Length: 303
Image 1: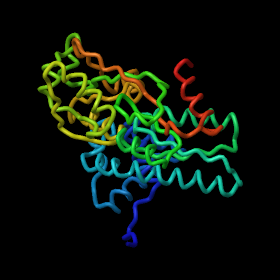
Image 2: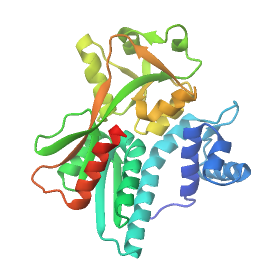
Image 3: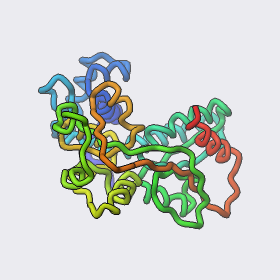
């Protein structure tokens, strides 16, 4: 079925993602090396094409509206696909033959894999890497079916026919907007209070969601979602938009906490640490690019 016009501009979708991450159209414009008026014009055109208001411009910071969060959820997959198209096309133009297919859960794909790719490219510029993002369950299915060389997932059970190696240690944190009631006092809440509060959560099937649910189950508790989102960027926008507290990887919000855009809240008596693992089909011998990429991932934690 052909696409219907008008079609959203990919560069504008990428700009929207940067606005969500940086909380400012001006900062997003600087990041994309365009003027602030040009960025505003591009975003307004995106809103016109989609017929939706995507950004709340009434406060001092630029927050995505609920419609903006939903659009960003869908746009993430589009932007990754375009990136892979560019990588593959570049490989064909330059006659590169060492092509590695990597599947990664959202957090790993956004905050770890890009750094690993840079190091791999420094080792040998002829290597190209295509990333397929998804939740941990989706990525496990990809590697089991042989559609990717390696899969990276966090804190989730995996089929025993897959080989596994821990490459990184992460932890989940509870974060809220700076003016949230939980920021008052010692910034600590009970497990019972966490369970009773509607949370911004990852969707079922994600490693983040599974680690959280498995951690509070021994206490006889369940989590209640106010929203279920598959994109880390969309979750961060929901936090800043004061939709509710969220449970998210420390990797994703470390800079936001340091810049006081978000506040970490401790949960008394609850540990949310997790392992990030590389998975591959056990019966297959890893080729040289795959071995190198796995080594880079493993060594990155000590840097």
